[in-house]
Structure formats: C-alpha cells, structure tokens
Image 1 (spheres, one colour):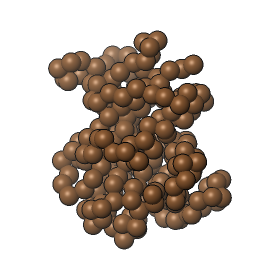
Image 2 (tube, rainbow, N blue to C red):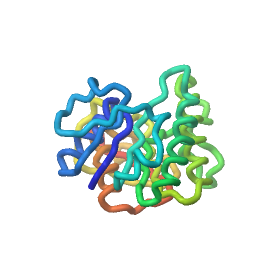
Image 3 (cartoon, rainbow, N blue to C red):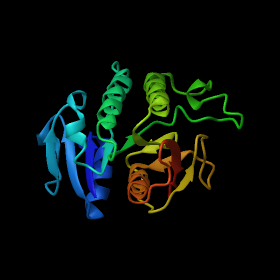
Length: 213
C-alpha cells in the first residue's frame, strides 16, 4: 500500500513509519523538515500539514495523521484536523488514520464522563486532550471521507516493549490483564498497521491496550 505519514519524524509517527516499512509498504514521510527523517528507505514530502491539499493526499491509499501540537498551541490539533478533513473530501478513495488521545475516552458505561473530565486527570494534558476530542467530534460530523481515530491507553509509553499483541476497545477506557491502561508506542504502531491492512473501524474510533511485560 502507499502510506503517507504526517509527523513521521515525531514519537508516534516514527514508530508507525518503522512498522509500515518493515511490512513492505511504500511509505512517504510528510514532514516540515526532511532532515529529521532518519529512515532512508522512505520517500519524503516536505510540506507543512496546514498546506496540504487534496492533490497531496490522493496519491496515497492511507494517510496517517501523527501531528502533535506543542505546549501552548494545542488548538492546532483542531486546526490541522479541519485542513485534513477538507483535503480528504477531495480524495474520497484515500483513508485517514488519526493518532488520537486517551482523554476523550469514556470511563462510565453510560458514556457521560470522559477521562479528561475526571478529578485525577493531569491538568497539563487537558488542553491536548480536549482539542484532540474536538478533532474526533468534527470527524464524526464529517461526510464524504473515510477515517479512523485510534486512541492509545492513558499511559502511552515510548520506551515500552514491543510485545506483538494488543487488545481493542471502542469508546471506553479499557485496561490490560494487570488492570493498567497502558500501551507501548511499538504495540500501538502494530494496531495502526493492522487497521490499515484490514480495516475494521471505518468512520469510528477505537482504542488499544497492551501488556507492560
């Protein structure tokens, strides 16, 4: 498959890029600075996410949005999301996979309380979580595009092991066998590529957890 990865030089993006390359896909890193792309086995499209148009994305089977808004500019998750929704409307055959957050997951069966609205949710992550949640809501309201929003567990560990397996949920926070809401970046990347290769969640969100050991 032809896969474009926005933010391919970032934390989550680099893991997804590696997993995609190892599975034999034709990968393009879509980044602002080509020099930051370490993997020489991929093509590079040096372009800001806010400049992407339909003609940039329609050549791909799948575009992964692993864009990360820096501290103080968390609203860019929403702004970037709007740009991609418009681009995808002009590229209806291209699927959009969004690296989401855990904050918008529900913690109750009635789906009235989100993780980011619980008392113990870290205040420093609220802006990111709420803006990623708004991006999800705008995807859910969009028409004429194919998307999947993948929420990691609450503890999204860049240094965690690649166990090679994971468990899936839908819109509610789930935990692993040890009762932890945990997933490593490596196992999350496996889930992303599995969804790319075998779509099971078109136009919906799902979440993943993995074991810490």
